[in-house]
Length: 358
Length: 268
Image 1 (cartoon, chains in turn yellow, cyan):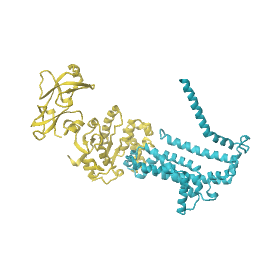
Image 2 (tube, one colour):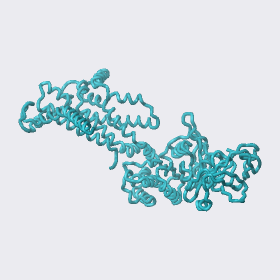
Image 3 (cartoon, chains in turn purple, yellow):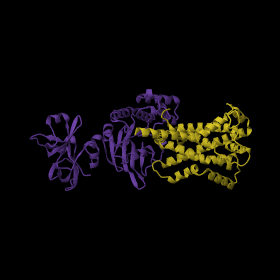
């Protein structure tokens, strides 16, 4: 959108291995101070893309611009970008302090400066007491913080993070998500994170790009991607989706299973075009006696999955092969006495249904 | 049932001890005899260090010992440098795909080819190139098989090596050389040292290859060759003492090597 604030521009970057394309003409603008997520299933090319940014792979085609300059010819050790490795890649023979100081020593900074900056980072990352430990004396979470500190201390233009939270357990991961976000805000450094965990991307990023088969499917803010997915792949990959396959029958209608469903869409009208209608589980309501809604389907409950705060009802309707998933607050669940086999009517507003042509 | 098991257990135990006895009694006898005051293998004359003292005054043995030390150290050094780079080359190249069976087999060759074949091959090789024989030709010959051993030991260490630390070093701005010196070498150094100790051990008591490629004269006689020369006039207690010392050196180096290789930095 606004090119002037873009710190990193990828212009039709491709990477081929043998006869396969790992990355296929990816163009992205990463803005200053942005937390950007590259999200996709394994093998979608996101790690290859990150490694090209870091300088460990050379693009087969396309250019990478940093602050307007093409950095493609620069080797990894000459790029003002740093990578935090998935395995953390801490130097086992050096203490935490030595690990962090390493990058600054490579810049041949005066010793006093190195000391000061390392101390600074040690305290931001809450590693002060561990400074003299070796990596094998640290827990997973501590190692992760050292790896982050080691990259941050270099004050890179862009920090690249390869699945930074992948090796941590769920509780710690949630804590570190917020921690990373805080560090990004405080340091004012642009972060690009690679992850396969859509929740992680939704929580942390300002903008994200969903990749599949080496291509960018959609790029935008988490809200945009969640509320307005542009394809079945994105709708399925981010969050839980109910997809109803049908054909376009009018400007505001899609015929599914012989029934006209009301939708709001600005997709051009191509009568008879096969499309999918997507409705998020929290947008579906269980209709009470006599309640009416723009769209209504009936079915019976086949499964009840309790998640604490919410309960997911799986309702078989005949409108799709898979049961529709309805999220109801658990408090309401107790009140309504839902049970497996029970017949229910589901309803949703036209504005909550998206039409997907891809 | 438990009765039969305990009987078979006892039988197995006895068997085990017999095997151990078969392996180690001759060596124990040799060590004992090296401390025997009377020079006869048949009569025990009391404990004495006189054969060790005699050893220290035998100039032929001392010069042979010095030669062995020179050969072993030089061959080990060459093998450590070349073997390590060989291992790095193979493993870095292989990283990711698992081809290279041919390279593997070729590498194993110097370890399993009979010594006598290697000895003759090297001798013809030196003749062909018109290289005179002496300590230098023994050093080169020993380096040939030692490279294979160092390479094998270093490669086992590289199998569990996290290559991303090399990329991390480059990413932080280090040159390839700095990465080698400050990250790679410290990480594989215990392996290099273990390989070095192993090749030192092998070199110290290697006889056949040294014998074929030494040329003539005391100047290029190594310890095993010296022992062989002395033994032609009968086994003297002096040789027992010498053998005991050589064994001590070998076992120490071997144990150190195993120890280094077994515990890859659980804790430092």
